[in-house]
Image (cartoon, rainbow, N blue to C red; front, top):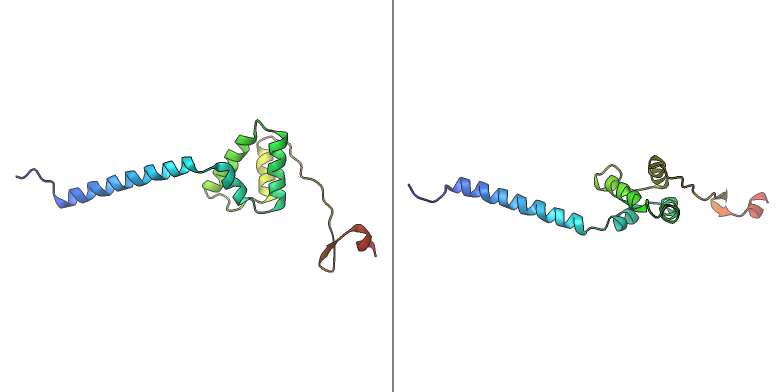
Amino acid sequence: MSDELPDELKLKMLRKLMQSQASKRDEKQALLEDPEKTVYSKLSDDRALELVEKAKQLYPSEYQIVVKVLYELVKRGVVEKLDGLTVLAVLERLGLDVKPDLRIRFVKRGKEVGLDEYAE
């Protein structure tokens, strides 16, 4: 008997080693990834950006929790893009009272116009 391992066993051990190294590399990448930048890159409309900024302003101590929750939703694939309605729902579930600014838009012939032009 020789002290050498069979080729199949060597191959199996090598695959296992490669998988463990790949998982460690993925964990390091996850640690290096900035959750706040990821969340801001996934905001799909102005309303979502406005709500996140307002939450940051009104609740600075809870802001990191908000970012963490939104990041987890994106990371797990629950949502691809964060729109205003999704961000508002998350903020309400966290118990944060963040109201979007009220905007009344008038559209006339496919263009946004002011109240004076709309009344004409």
